[in-house]
Length: 587
Image (cartoon, rainbow, N blue to C red):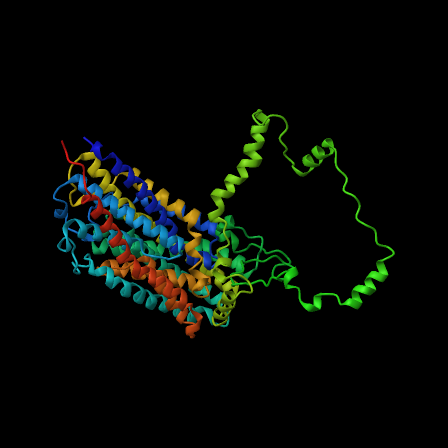
C-alpha cells in the first residue's frame, strides 16, 4: 500500500522534480544549443523544435528504465536504516536544494552543471543524515565524490585540446585554401564519416541506456560504428553533395530545403539566369557577426549647442513668419457618434453589444486574448539572442565585443554554409544522448521518491523508472529551453568568442569526443564544462588571447565552483532542520 501519510512529501517532490527538469532545459540544454544558435546554423525557434524532438525522444524511447538510487554511488544505502519515509524526505530535500540553486543560477545567467548540482545535494543530505562517514569521499572507480572536484579541471582541459585539434585540421585543410568551397566538397565524405562515427559512439556508449548497446561485443560495436558511418557518408554523396553544389557552387537561390531529397536530380539542375549577380537574391545565409549602427536620438536635455538657434536666428525667423503666424485652431469636441466611428476605424475588430455574445467571444479569443497568449508562450523562442550576446549598440560592452571579434578571422559564407549541416547533425545527436541519459538528474531522485511512496518498501540499489516519469521529465526539459533558455544563451556563444558554423562544429565535435573518451575510462566530465572548454580551445586558435572573453569565463567558472558548497549545504541544512525539529509530545 502507498505511504499515504507522506502524500505531502510526494506532492512536494513532484513539484520540485518538475522545476529541476525545467531548469535543466533552461540551463543545461540551452548551454548545448547556444553554439548552434550563435553560429546562425539554427534559429532559436529551430533549436527549440530540435530539442523538443531529440530531448523528448531520447528520454522516452531509449532513456534509462532503471535508475541508480544513489546517484554515482555518492552515499551508502545503509545511511537511511531501511526507512522508506526517510528516503522519500531525503530525495525530496535534494530536489528542493538542486532546483532552487538551478533557478538562481539560470536567473543570474550562470551556465552550471546540473549533474554536479544534484550530486552535491545528495551528498549534503547524506552528511546530514549519517555524518561524514555516510559519504564516499574518494575516487571509488570514478564514481566517488572526489570525481566532482577532479572534473572541474579535467573536462574543460581535455575538451579544449580536442576542440582546438578539430578546428586546426579544418582550418588548414579547408578554410585557408585558395578554393575552400571546392576543397570542402572533396573532403565532405570524410568529414561525414568521422562525425557519424563519433556520434554513433556517443549513442552506443552513453546515449541509449535502455538498449544496453554498451554491452555489445567489441566486434559488434566496431561493426555498428563503421557501418553507420559508411552509410551516412554514402548518403552525403547521394543527397548532400548535389544539394550543396547547386546552392553554393551554382548559386541557385531558388533551391529550398525540400529539394534536398531530390538528390542526384540536382546535378543537372540549371540555376536562374541572374544567379551570382549583384541583383540576385542571397543563395546562402549570412553567418557573419553583423552589427548595425543605430543613430541615437538627441533628447531635449542633451541637445548640443550647435543644435540650438542663436538669438539672431530666432529673430530673423520671427520677423519672417511673424505676419503669417496663426494661433492653433481650437479643439473641436467630437460627438459621441463621431468618437464611435473613429474607434471603429482604429480597431478592425471592435466589440459591439454585450461581450458575452457569441460573436464577441469569438473576437475576444481570436483577436484580443489569442495573440497575447501566443506571444506569452512564444516569447522565449523569439528573443534576439545575438543582440543579447553582442551588447547594446554604442555601449562600452559592445565596443569590447567588437574589439574581440576583430581579432578573429571570418571566412566566406559559402564555405561556412557547408559546416552548418555537420553542426546541426552534431547538436541534434548530442541532444538525443542528453535526453536519454542526463534526464535522470531530475527523474532519478523523483523515481526513487515514487518507488518508496507507492510500495512502502525501502529502496534497493536500483529503481525502476516508469515511462510516464521519463515523458514527464523530457517534457519539462523542452519547456524550460523554449521559455527561458535564452537567458543562458546570452552569456555564451558570441559572448565568449566569435562564432561561425566551422568554429561551432569544431566546438561541438570536440566536446562529444571528450564525453565519449571520458565515459570509457571512468573520468568524470560534465557536458556543460566540455562545451565551454572546447569553445576556449577553438578561440585560442585565433592566435590572440584577446579573441576570448576571459571576464565571462571567470563568471562561468565561479558558478561551477559555488555549485558544490552551496547546494550541499542547502540540502543538508534543509533535511537536518526537518528531522531534528521539535515535535508535540504524543499522548
